Length: 458
Image (tube, rainbow, N blue to C red; front, side, top):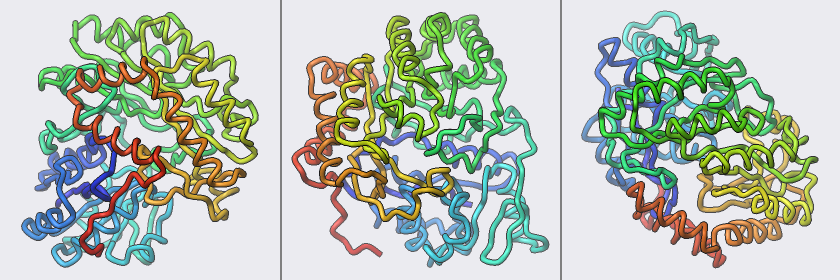
């Protein structure tokens, strides 16, 4: 089986190459069961689409596995079309497959099967079924059959990602404070009810690894030369005692590693943040989303504006850099509301910010209410969408101008520019920073940040 991440959509894609952990987890399970498996990360290796096609032709795997999120589903479909003549079976997994399901067979007829939900316990029975026939395994969808599957393993029992199959030197992260970058997942699921979040893969039940197991993996990464880890948990700070135990275990072992985590503003306090800082935490990313209480209510964040201010103040006081994820132009917002949020990000002292427009993705509560809207196309070079179906009550051109102003007014200042320059040097991400800078410049000047390859798109 060949597990593949396709190339960049076009030559000026400004996205950072981070490890495809989902594919690495599947590869680890296949290998544990004695199945031959390879990973082709064409994105990280910088392959063109012609080179990707040639590589699949050379390998000619019996089964090609792809995974995708909705914003980049078109990329997975293109990979399937190119690979179709050279493989026997093509299977798609990931959030898009789980949310959209049978509609994918119409969107991309080259795909044979889908894996719905978490794939580690499904992929080996799927290969057994391809070889021997019989009853369709739970978790696999064909054009005319499907039986649901519920994961039965504790998360500690899932094999650790097969990182040795990845081009580890090809990964960079601009906010890393050291060279040598890796990602980890220490928990799955999220019990909160944000209306824009797709939880179709891991659900609302939070399942977490114990502190010892987490730090064991971190120690393995340190031994492999990793200096910075990005925790990809939906909410790393959900359980205070577990975060405390992880930090204390890092300190007990004397691990020399730094890290970033995702958290909620109501899940941290000054004492916890100081401990996290001592244990190597350098960045915490918070889903702030808005400086307007009415928008937070629409998004079902269940936090107050004052709680945001308190968390950001405590994070900075602890010596940790806070990052704010921000949504501009949600339904009901007018120009003054967007401008208020742009000011709010400066007021709370965010060190980094990512501004985006709001999309009602399949699988989210928002989709049920707003999915029928045609949507405007308001995006920026950090978004991965080919076309971003933004839901907003503002005129698209006005929101697009506000989006440009938001990015420009935050980052085109001496302190943020100097910080990003230091980060690029510290993390070894100078080339990635330059790529992002060029894309941002083109976008701010009114041009597209993207450039499709000149060869015909198949």
